[in-house]
Every structure is written in structure tokens, then in C-alpha cells.
Image (cartoon, rainbow, N blue to C red):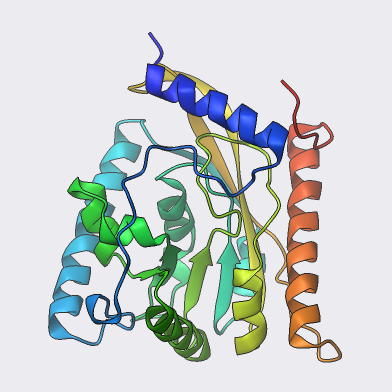
Length: 276
């Protein structure tokens, strides 16, 4: 029996794809609570933040590695790590967003290449930080996360932290598609934020894309577990002769174009939206 909830999510994805509502959420996420400036320590400078981050990262590794051992989470292959390794300093990593597992897949692929003392930072939605309950709520709040906010001052602090992290050589994972569309295989058009951050901090964007294939195993919702292949594509650098606005558009367009080309190559078919 397939989960009624997941079937409804798939129907929403089909509807939003047809209407080109690319960044609209399809999951029943909790209501967003506004993130105020005093409720987040973006750079993890407080002792309490360091302790909670240490605990959360350990728990996350234990949880996901157990899923890998039991075959519930499958990473089949990693391609293009040489492209990731071309960038020694700070960078924005972009990736398609289709699962609560995809950020760990990216982290697991690059963890041995992260310099000592460095982590992969993840930009997350406001509500996931302020109002997501349970185990994943704990991870969303403490695993080197950079939550967005609808509060102006909090967003100023966010932007300052992003620039600081990129300047000191950290890697930041951003989903420029914004919303998570469960097991959706196609690249979606991007929002501009990730590319503005890269332009402002004068760092490259490293496009990542995860392709999927069905396995013979079923997940808890009655759908086939997906085996992931992770792809890192050549980094894209801002151009000196373009304005910040032009550079953000350039990075966004080149990144999307690279993913479309990869999608069409891997799945051996043209990218068409709105098909059954």
C-alpha cells in the first residue's frame, strides 16, 4: 500500500509543475514562526551553540549512516569530485532539493576534503528552524545551519554571517529551487539569492546535482527506494567585467544550464516540464 500522504504530495508536484509554481512547498510543513535576531547564533560563537552543534552533528552522522547500512539510504556513485577540489577557498554549493537525505549525501561526498575545523553549512527555511518538531527539528536547528528569516534585522545578520563564512573559506550548501519536491528528478528554475551571495563575496558556485534510479526495495511509504548518484560540475566564477546584478544572473543561468545538460545526458531524454 502506498502512503496516501505521499500520493497527495505527488499530485501537488504535478499540479505545481504544470502551473510553473517552482518554489511552492508541497509538504505539510509546520507554520512558520518569525525568527528574531536574538534567537539565532549564525556563526556559532556561543559555548552553548558549539555544544549543541557537536551533539547534533554526531547524532546526524549516526542516524544517516545507520540508514545507509540498512539500505534505506543508498548512495550508488559520486562523480566529479575533481571539480569540487578545484576550489580551495569559500564557495556556494547548489543542489537539487528532493529529500531530507540530500544534504547529508552532499556532506558525505565531500567530508574527507573539508579542511580540519571546517564544516558544510546549510541554508534552511525559516519555519524549519523555528517550528519543526522532533528529531529532524533538532537537526534543523543545530547542524551548522543558516536559517532565513522574514525579520529584516535577522536577515541582515544572516547576510553578514554568509559573507564572513565565505570569506574565511567555508562551503555553504543552498537549494536555489527553494522548496523540497519529494523524489522529483528534474532541475527546476532557480531563485537568485545563492548567486547574489556568491557575487557579493566574490566566490565561485559549485553546481551539484543528484540523479536517481529505482531500486527493488520499498520505503516505509510503499515507494521504491532511490539510489543516488551525486555529480559535482565545474565551478562557475563571477566575471570581473560584469556588475553584481549581471553576475548574479550569469551565475544563475550558467548553473541551471549545466544541470539541464546533465539531466538530459544522464536520463537520455530532453527536459520537458508538465509531462505525465
